[in-house]
Length: 367
Image (cartoon, rainbow, N blue to C red; front, top):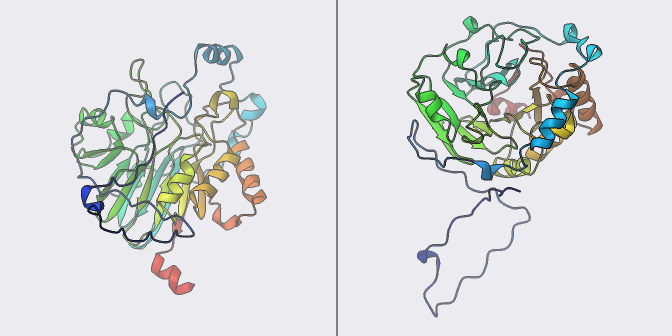
């Protein structure tokens, strides 16, 4: 129903074409494995750009029609039943301050939902920061924020995946200094500039910017955007690949369903060390499969992108759908084991939990 965005190779220029009558050079042998496409040159920070009014052509599935909305309203499957809510007290939660890390290490701390504190290349980066107890249209969070705001170090940058309220939280962002660099999807910069943020970098899919030696690449996702009654798909949606100066990579998938983009991301960004992958808010599947992964799809997506490790997110914080509250965790563990993957590479953290990636130089010395 919608157009698919195509990756384009470099255009042929007149200089690429030999003069008439001159023999052409023999073709290079075909490599046994396709080479990764060249990455885009980083764009200037804070660049003002003009975007199309709508990004409907980027959808990879149709948005629900009136019949689907009516069925959803009739069935009312928006929350688990009493039995599904019974395990709220068992949700893993260990709030606390950030652990100390060496300058060359990559560390991640799960604050809850899609909010992470990522320390990479000496920077502290927040992903989709939501420190509020409530978000619009959703019951209060069922676990506390994993990292108290007052214990955070200076925030060097923020990345936003899309504009849904559980990923773009105005009360949390108001706590930040207005000169904090923010990296956002195309079309979302005006929202930040109206709130007086001064370094707002908007990117299209496959574009990048750089801050203090850390590269921020915006990549596709199977999702959509909407914040008001009149702005459906007026801004883009996606995930982020953060690459440190030593080449270590963290992929923050944002909010997404399953599909072809994962293999393309893995092809373009080989060697992802850690994927922060959503596993919750998936039931009922007939309603949510196009935009939210279930746990088994999340494990498949991690394999598609070629990531060595996975840290689950987007569960155990806000009740957004009908699956039992502990089911995402039990299913992702079972799916990981069924694929024969190393259990140490599934970082199923509690809210507030942290893990640290060793610097590349140290890993090489050990190996």
